[in-house]
Structures are given as structure tokens and as C-alpha cells.
Length: 223
Length: 354
Image 1 (cartoon, chains in turn cyan, purple):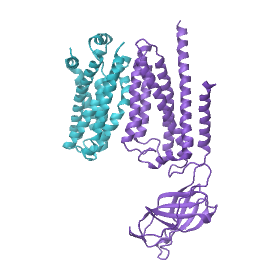
Image 2 (cartoon, helix red, strand yellow):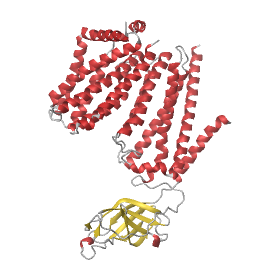
Image 3 (spheres, helix red, strand yellow):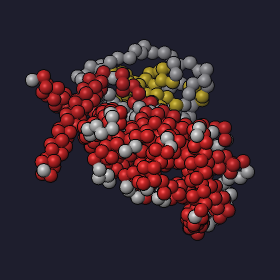
Image 4 (cartoon, helix red, strand yellow):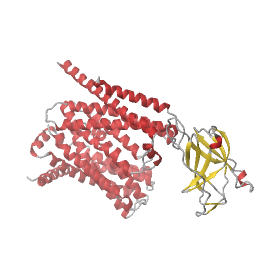
């Protein structure tokens, strides 16, 4: 099998496993929407710009972490022992990253839509909401490329959710610094062109995380 | 003897650094140039001859008081103001004798004195009640900058004052931490690049240098926080440089937690090495790359250009460079002791097991 069809197979497999048991993804979405609704209860529809921005990123970040924290069939030692011989580690990492992009993209989209629905669009209208959404999607891409690696590392170390958070949260802070700055720039009415370089930073960080993971993952996986 | 000389050298350097950091006096500077009698300034007669008070810090005006010269400057326009009276070393009175038409309202204040040299207070004077005409020319006096006739001293910086000494205690912490994390980075690469089943010697090196590096990182945060309390008025402020420093320390704390949560020695060596490479790349991004693209109040950055000239000041350089070298030598020594202790501990465990 060629590399591409390998990756496609692994990705399809991951999605199929996810959809086979829909409670998992439904649980994530309920978590995200419930978190947004809690924010809505606390602030009402007229949250200040800063609160809106801060709450949005906090909910997006934790929904993302929640999405990747559940244990995987692939993390089982026996399955891994089989996979080591069946596929190249890099292919597996690419498939896992792509899968996380899809998963986190979905969760982020639902979360962001819920945010606009409940907390109102006072600070984001028309194109600005679209620009904000672009930032959200790039952030979830960065999260996906980092967490694919961190999740594998944490499961190899035998730690649970807390280890993913301890290892992943500090590493993701550069991304959060850039995306919160981008969001607050948009809300303060700064023209998209003057803050678009943040999107470039996000893309660069994603690429950097992915490249690091791509180089290091084989060392992580082998016995 | 050669084995020991670098350790002795490091300690000697640090002794020199501590001695000079806390004994070299701060140079003189100007604090304020203020209106003495605001009420009288409404009186029509005295309107143009208001008296102002000049306040210095660490100045020596009672020595040769007649030689104290006061000037105000805007761009290339410079004009003298008469000094009426020298009260004491740090206080003097001057008259605001100026023509009715001035090229500007905001002026820098300068003094020349045989001992203090030329001192400078940016935007120290703001005049009102004058006609402003940018083409107005003022009489030009003889003015040339003089250097201070004082023993070795640190430069005076507005708002920083004595806390300039923190340069020798705070900045070398981060240099040393960077060096130690660099050692750990190289050790982790070598740990990963050796063939499977190799020893975990490099892993122990990485662990020891991260542990010692964390000590320096925490000390860097503490010295920075103390300085910020004095200068910025808060223990912590939201600033890219500070965020980067804190996150770096958190990432390496994650590294140590990861080590603690893996039992198997060989797996631990590999996982820790992988995470350490991530950590070092993030360290580089946070402390070297991101601050260059964002605005920061941190000294040496765009928001505080006064500090950039520090690199050029020979009195600071004479202490700062030895400080960096001395702390680095001490850090390396600590790392080696830590590594030895870990290896002995491991050996002891192995003997106990047998």
C-alpha cells in the first residue's frame, strides 16, 4: 500500500471507530454546549468584549483538551504492538493529526456557533465573525497537531487526563497568547488586515508542532 | 588543579560581582524641575521671572556651586537659564528668564557641572503663557557636554534608580538557565540517537541539567518579580516577556512530572527525551522569537528604549559580563554535582536490589 492510501485507511478507520459509538462525540458536544450555556447564565447576552473573548477561548481550549483526552483502542499495548509492524509510525501520526483536526474542528465549530447563539453577536458582526472563526479553526489545527503527539506521549507514559493537561497546557500557551490577542483585536474593531499576521503565526506554530512530532514520533512509538 | 580552576574562577567572579553590584555607587541624575510658586505666577509683574526648583539625586552641587550651569533644549535649540541659588547638593533654584516667544512649550532640562558632568531630564520643563512660534530663534550659548568627574559608578536611569543593580542578578539567571536547558537538549538528542537498548547516561544528564536549570528559572522569576514590584508597582504584569518566562518554567515542570509518572527506566529515558526536545523548541520560541514580534515593557525591549544604551555603558558591562560567566560556571558546577549524586544514588539502589 502506498503512503497515501495507508493514511487514508487509518483516518477512515479512526472516524469509523468514533462513529460506531456515538456516545463519545455526543458527550463532547454536550460538554461544550453546557459550558457555553454556563457562561451565558453567568454573563447574559451582553457580556463585555473582554469577557466574551476570554470565555470563548477558555471553553474552546477545554473542549479541545476534553476531546483528545479519552483513551483509544490504539493505545492498548497489544494493538500498538500490532500496528508497529503494520504501519509506519509517521503515517499513523499523520492520520491521527488529521483525525484530530476533524474532531477538534467539529467541536470548535459547534462551540463557536453555540457562543454566537447564546452570548450574542454584539461584538462580532458579518465578516468579523468569519474572521474570528478562521482564528478558531487555525487554533484547533494547532491544538490538533500538538495534542496528537502529546496524547500519544501521555498514553505511553500510562498517565491519564491529568498528564495530558500537565504536558499539553504549557506547550499550547503560545498558541493561546496569539489567538486571544487576535480575537481581542478583532473585537476592538481593528481592521482584519492589521491583525491577520496572527493567523500566520498560528499556521506557523501548527506547522512547527507537526514537524517536531513527525521527527520525534518514531522514537516514541518503538519499543 | 586545572580541574578545580574553573570552579575557583567562577566563585571568584561571583564574589567580584556581588561586591561590585552592592558597593559601586549610583551616578547622579536629575529628578525634577518644578515651579516653586504657582500662586505668584498669576501676578502680572513676576509672570516672566518665575523661580523653579531643580532637584537631583546623588548630585554634588555644593562643590563649586558657581559652576552649575542650567540649560533647556528642544531639538537643536538650546538656551541657558540663570541659576539663582544652590540650596544643597541636590536642590537649586533657577529663574525662568525667557523671551515672550518660544519655539516650543516642552523642553528637555540639562545641567553642566564639573563633578556631575552633563545630566539630562527628558521633557523636564513645560512652560505656559508664552507665544509659541516654531521659527523663533533663541540666543545660543557655549555648550559642550562634559563627562562626570566621579569614581566608578552605575548610570542613573529615570524610574529605575538603584534597581539597576538587578541587571547583575536577574538577567544572568536566564542566561544560565538557557545554557543548562541547552545541555539538556543536546543530551536528549544523543539519548534518542543512540541505538535501542543503549544506556540511559544521557537521560541522567538531561534530568540533572533540567533540575538545576529550574532552580535558575525560579530565581529568575523571583528576582524579576521583586524588581517589577518596585519599578512597575505590581508583582506580576501581563507582558509577553513575562508570560514566556512563566510558561517556560511550567513546561519544564511538566518534564519533571512526566519523569515521575513513568516506572520503566528505558521508556522513561525515551519519553522524557522526546518531551524535552519539544520543551526546548518552545523555550526558544517564547524567549527568543515571540518577544521580538510583540510590544513589551520589559527593559531592553521597545517599550523601554532607555535600557538599550546599557549595553554600551562600560561600568555595567564590567560587572554584567563577569556576572553572566560566573553564574554559568556555578550552574555548570551545580549540574555536575547533581549528576554525580543521581548516578551514585542509582548505583546504591542497584546494590540494594542485589
